[in-house]
Amino acid sequence: MVYIIIGTVLLLIIAPIVAVLPSARQKQQMAMRRQAMGLGVNVEITSITDPIPKQEKYLSSTGKQLEPNLSVTAYRVARKMPQSWRKIPLVNWTIERRVASEGDDLPGTWCWDPNKPNDMSKELTDFIVAEIVSMPDDVVRVDENNRIISVYWHERGDVDGVQQIATFLDGCARRPEVKVDDDFEDGADGGDDLL
Image 1 (cartoon, rainbow, N blue to C red):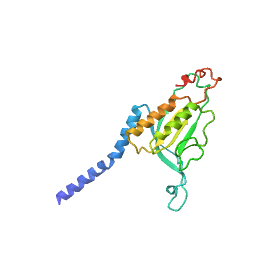
Image 2: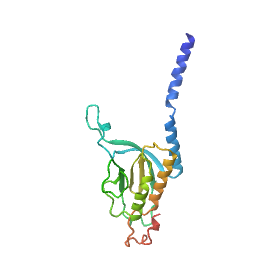
Image 3: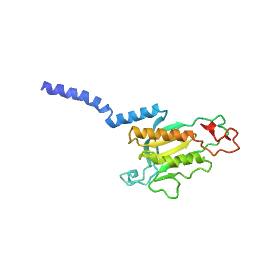
Image 4: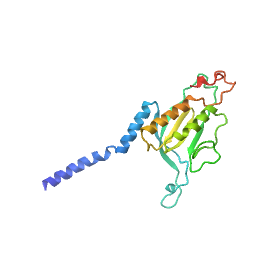
């Protein structure tokens, strides 16, 4: 009887400790995030509006439509500010993976949301079109907002996915965000000061 009581007490002490230990999947995600931070990428757990909002998972048990918020992890890189950054307009853009993409210049199910900005540089557009197919399958959105480029994904991949995302973010950050115009004094040489 005493051994049963001792065993029960030990079980009550050890069970909560074991419950808070990270799972194998959580350990893999932590390793991926450490690798990303080592490559100079900021990592943030966030939520976005789901690009495919009309799904059954957004219905309550009573049939009421719920907010289509999608929990994701954002991997972010900031553009280096050029010396003449006040003269260069911001170009904010978003591309999302949707069920069907029609009439877009992006491959697969990727599409601009809402449209590709007119003043976006051709070099950056060409890079996105060529490289977006190399992104992991669980990436749902890529955007640039206030010179911060973000990739939103579910982290179902592995360290190769982290490397692909870091390479894509670095490639986007190295390309000029706006069309180089004669109006920009420092940008007339092809936009090298944007790097």
